[in-house]
Image (cartoon, helix red, strand yellow):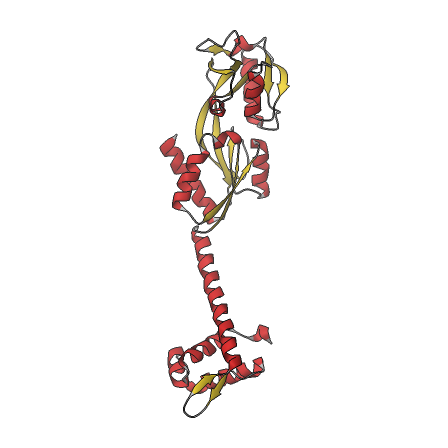
Length: 299
């Protein structure tokens, strides 16, 4: 029975309950008065209780009618709320954006992007997930994140991208190292040093870029330590366990005991925003456009 109740019947009931007059209620609803009377009787029949006391002079709600009116009003309030929420989500004013990012992005481009987006879309919920660049691409394809800020450039079908900044690679050496006082070094000058590097699956294109830089300089680097992050790489260099080639922005971690030295040849890595080419979320599209505007203005 409850499933048979329609919004029109509830609307007829609530208007009559507000007017307590069949003629005024019918005029407000733009229906004939007999049709309104019949609709209310059918509603009472389906409910199994009387909603109104009718006399020749007045119409009054019964106790059960007053209780039903409170619930009917809640139904309409929930419906209005649902419509408003749906329109806000469709317009990108409400919703959630799941953002995959690297730790390095959090000390470079991402804080300013988040600040600008929050100013423009204060009701949108942001979910941030720190992941290695390779894992971000997988999460993006699986739908676990809406956008991904990664280090490096991935060639991926079905994904759109926006380069946000380029970060020069530098040599990272202990402060006590023989090269620490140099203003610039060649990559070849690192040939005899043990290297600290991350696993290839963390950031395949940057891993290959660093190895390619060494090979083009005439040597195969000897990997002495493997670290899972740029921060850990810097920490291992700081305690004298090797040297590394890292983006210049790694300096922002503030790791003690290391020197960041420009290298030749000069090579840079990109920080890139990726999203699915078929992205249908309005709030995600707003995040992408905000990121693009921030990148143009700030970097």
